[in-house]
Image (cartoon, rainbow, N blue to C red):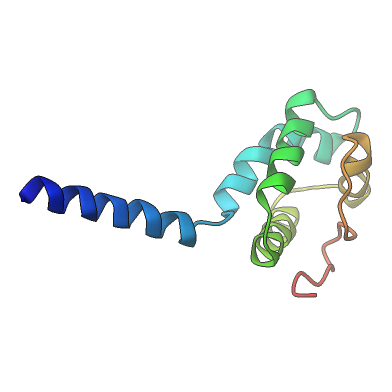
Length: 110
């Protein structure tokens, strides 16, 4: 009986977790850390950077996830010495389509 209860509790926790989980700022930052050199100094983004861009955009399935990614990017841009022109060029250089302008002034709620 105790084992059955443990199994049910584990299933409930896993099931509930899958529904609640979404994209987090920590994941966004982790995925895009390989892009920092490019975003601050220019040049060419690394394959790891472009992979991180793809992973981040792929994980942002819902509107809430997309807003989270947008807000995380704006926050990171304000904390680091990121060049706005490099940030705007990054999706194109990584052959990724971002449906909104990447800017510190982007309205993430729209």
